Image 1: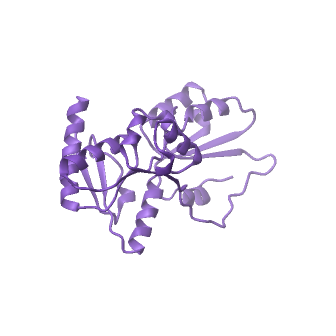
Image 2: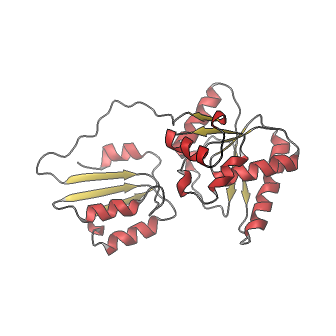
Image 3: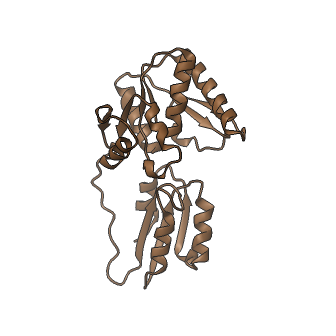
Length: 240
């Protein structure tokens, strides 16, 4: 998701379109390496009461809207759609709100907040149908998919008799959208010599590691954590 957002902002910049990211955070622990050269603001709140935490974020966003005066607000998750709609009303700034969710709505809490946005960008036809099933008018949805950069390089597969090498590049979610649990369960049943290389971080990183230990396959897994240039690491450091 971070790569896609960065690529889009880079394209905006090339077309002389100004942009800024606004984050809702509980703390200041998120990795900011991918934000280099990108203008961003944050609203911090670790208030445990949900309605008070939301009020804090909505107030901060309404002030940002008033100061920044954007032409469009694009929300990358469903709760941000609610915040943006309420902040818009509070600030009095008449700005269209787009949703651009990067995860299945079937796995998101409060997915109904998607209807708080005026228009919608779906990265797949499946997410479009999930939007429609939650009451979003089809006329307000555009399926745009995610941008990708074409590459000519090929990662060679192991030859006969060599160790089977598996690579996971993505966010560490034990179940939910990514279901790293299923990957580990499946590999625990694989016969023969194999190795799994895991590139990525997330809220379930330690849980995934612990599950691998519980399956007695941790000696076959290499956990790299978040990598700014994952494919460079794959090509240079991971032997087939």
